Image 1 (cartoon, rainbow, N blue to C red):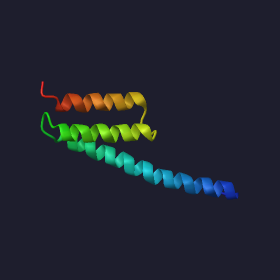
Image 2: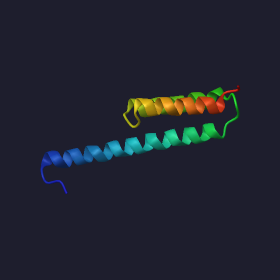
Image 3: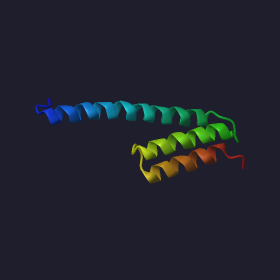
Amino acid sequence: MAITKGAKKAHRQSLRKKRFNDARKAAMRATLKAARGAQKGDTKSLAAAYKAIDKALKSGLIKKNTAARRKRKVAKLLSTK
């Protein structure tokens, strides 16, 4: 366990960030799951998936190439071609 005051504060901050990161990651997984179950050409679920992926990228949960790969995959899944 943390001993110094600074270490205790850093631990509290890391726990707070973990809650936010876990919520954002769960939201991203839920929107991607909804997109997988959506109809072809459903632009609303595509937009929601893109938004969740972009937010996860912005907060540093996933890397740039991972975000691009997931966007490409969901776009291909929902494309009408």
